[in-house]
Length: 148
Image: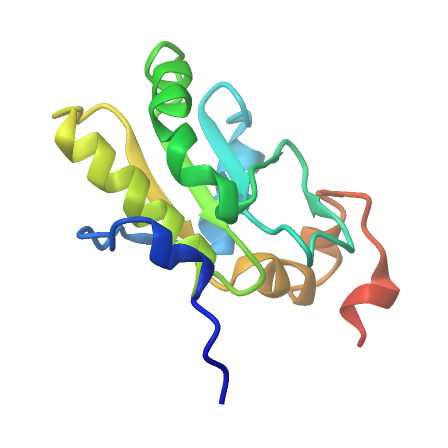
């Protein structure tokens, strides 16, 4: 049994429970012509396991160092046309969920109804496992990483 303190213990526990966005919905946005960085922001919060590729247009902001940068990230996004911030990690059940909730808490604190914080259901693992229609939209896709 490990007695090591989890990385997120240094930050407040999130209060919000942001909604999920399915990979099919995100694929639909892309097919409709919505653009990462303009209509939505994709945030890949992996750090040590950042391998095998990332969804095209994603920013890599590791969860372990994200919390103190939320005000700056919010400032950038609130001054853009992006309406959604979509967070993901490997499976989006740990870091992706936590970071999406922290950002949702911040949006609530700022009373900003224009921007929504969403969790990409299934994370990058679900995206990569969903087939060529999804992997063709990854930068740096390495099939050998996902077949482990």
